[in-house]
Image (cartoon, each protein chain N blue to C red):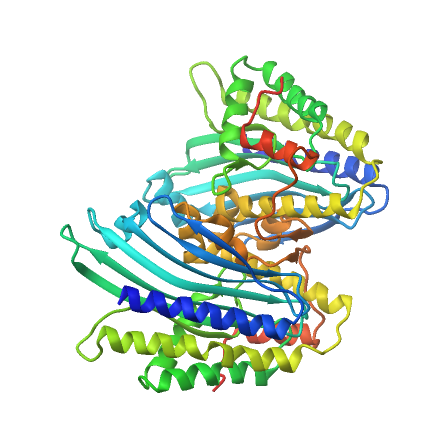
Length: 300
Length: 300
């Protein structure tokens, strides 16, 4: 399974970066190959200052070795080796009318002393963070998520949609990071589902990513915007930073386990503003977004 | 002691905001009075878009009530009431040649069931975060800190200077936030020192603040700067955000105990940039700063 999934995310990284480069038309991803001292490494691809994409990363990594202490505590095991691989992406478009998107699909294995797999699971998801809310964009994104889920189990979409709303919750602001999507974790073998079923599901989701996001980019990329729109985008990007640095388990895990900082923090937006106690005008498009973020809704 | 220190920080807030307004010359602090549902409140004063100060806050608060759960765990007590008051300030100047400064002086009391004080202490400190390093500025800041400390105990400056270097360490970047200053906490009564001695020390430090920072502002405020200098300042401000949101105990405590978010996050800079894997040119002024941040040094 580890070879199968790692091969998959390598192909998917190629597919996604090629398509995003085609859309941008001006700049290409820059690739950095890195090694992890304790075992494994990654292939980071970052795009910056494009015509469409102001900053973004589509990164893969596959790491292995002795289980780091934080994970030993978390999983309540004395010792053990692990393998983990995944693809993580965050795209921050320049135009404030195009939403930011994040996705991550990952696979994890743990071994006993003689190298047998004792536990294995998939995790991941994707979520959309608009600065100006077009209902049809949120509906489109969620529809693609739902269709991909429904091919595998009718319970998946409602369950993972709800988990996503709960996970991407900026609790200190009492608001969602964006309009959600999917979030799932610890997808293990069950009586009903084999690991191959899990693989088929996660790769279905991965394969649907471009379809969920690209039509939104194309619909919004030519809308003209003002400095005020850009300011609002940058203020909202501040909330994105707050979520990632205060609440996001993946980011904090990376920072505390000596992960490759630049690959982890590629998720942070290129330009950000913090204004004291900023509130948009009642009835404005900006206020309309905040209303929806305060009460996550069902889009499909 | 609580009345005495709270009266002190009210006066100090006035002194500091009046002096900073005079220096700025263009804009004034905006005041927000807020109440805490569980008891107490604060007086937040924020300055924005000034001629000299791009964003800054000089806030006081005095809160009381039942000890929040996180603190009960931390202090290993079942129950109890508390009182805490303090002044917190962060100043982000516009000109990249003027350093950012942070300071905080606070007092804490805990009570038993019949309302007697069971423990009380002072904490606080101040630290300087330059974007371009002028040795004489770091030396001046530390000299003022040292002189104030030396009036009270010869061990204070070396001890609190070292604690400051350790505290303001961005461990995931392996670098200091800035050139340090002082950091002290749990200053309790000892055989040698009464609470009044502690009060005298902390207020000596508070009183020395303007003297430690204002001469630096005056020396640097008229240096002309380019967009490149501003970009560097904004990139470094990103590290400031990373420290405050990932590592700063005070910030995280506030976010997790339902503190007044806008008063806590006034510390975040007005405009910030994150570039992927940015490294200044070898031998540049920017690289010179990084060298010092990687190895905190003795300034006096």
